[in-house]
Length: 139
Image (cartoon, rainbow, N blue to C red; front, side, top):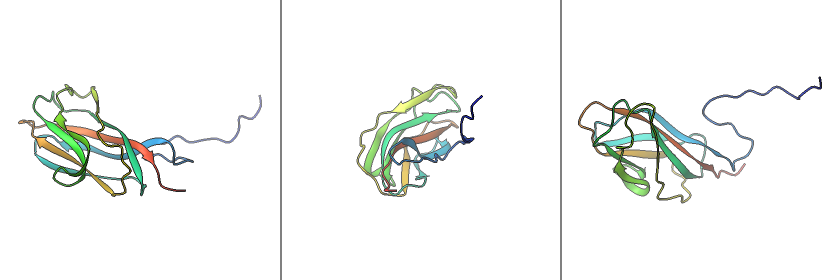
């Protein structure tokens, strides 16, 4: 049998890529409190210039009936609205994945994004937020 080449290792987040033109995880926060209004800071992972392509919310601890949230470039739902504040009612449990509608794919350079809960659930609730996009940092 011929040698298939050097061994490779696959690891979980953050993504280590040989090119910056690949869709990758830009930010993640697990256990966001969805029963309190306000911001959760999502630090950008190893990028100084990026464009958000997809925002995923999953692993809801309960069926979300009233929580609403969005993703912004500044605190208090300020700056650019990457994902508009909208109901999270599609999240009916921990196995459901909700891909949010991205309103702005403009190039960003800020090192934090802000997941803003505009309407609290009204009962203890958490969820995980994943932000994917293109790393535009020159290599």
